[in-house]
Amino acid sequence: MGLNAGMDMRIEAAVTAALSLGMGPASHGEAPARLRGALDHAVLPGGARIRPTILVSVARACGDDRPQITDAAAAALELIHCASLVHDDLPCFDDADTRRGKPTVHRAYGEPLAVLAGDSLIVLAFEVLARAAGDHPRRAVDLIRVLAQRTGMPGGICAGQGWESEPVVNLSAYHRAKTGALFIAATQMGAIAAGQEPEPWEELGARIGEAFQVADDLKDALLTEAEMGKPAGQDAAHARPSAVQELGVAGAVRHLKDILGGAIASIPSCPGEAMLAAMVRAYAERMTPVDLHPVRG
Image 1 (tube, rainbow, N blue to C red):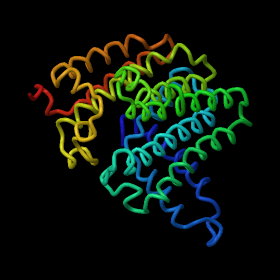
Image 2: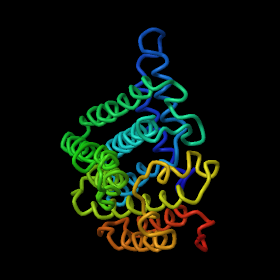
Image 3: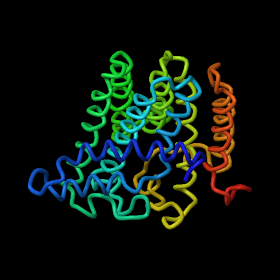
Image 4: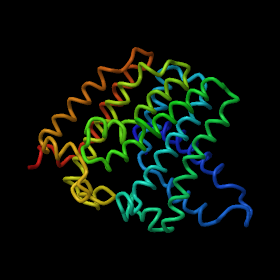
């Protein structure tokens, strides 16, 4: 379980219900069994569910007056994240063998089904939000808009992956799109689900996303595959831009601390402001591996 067991259970229930919708009828012959298996493999068991946790935390801090919409938003966001992991792991990108301590989807089911699984999860995410529209149509439409913006171009996770094919990379734009986009979606969608304006919540999401990217760069450079549950040393192997490459290990750690301080300062005024600040501090402790204190190298 994560930082809040009750919230973990709520999110897992929402994700599981959404995934069941995407599996199709249980009777044999009405849905491709191996694709159903690939979807299940991609989503369950999950990782830390950090993005939906942030989304629900923001919604709760803002009142969470429509919990069904909040749950749909959390599930949709996590499905997009899982889809991105399936596609990131493909041979045309990272060519990863493991994810979350088990074989990647394309290793377990083959490349064609991995592509289809990722595509299916993206479509399912938007179906989940559309089905929630009956509870509050305007909020559902706004949720769909924000999630679409943070998934595609020009500043979503698709753009983030696209930066890796550019001859010259803008590191800030790369990090903001590849990692920051779904964290911005998390904070903005949490606000929307609770009936608040999303714009004041963009900076918090961007800062949390940047912090997670820097932390991931540090882990990729310094930890082992066994410690991470996925291949290590991928930034260097694929000549990808990273905070460690640009700033060095010590500089990246200092940068991470600065970002997290800014994240706490950027939390908009709301009833749950103190709770959100505590959440960011707790994630800060989890983000940086213990063996980076003191910094190696």
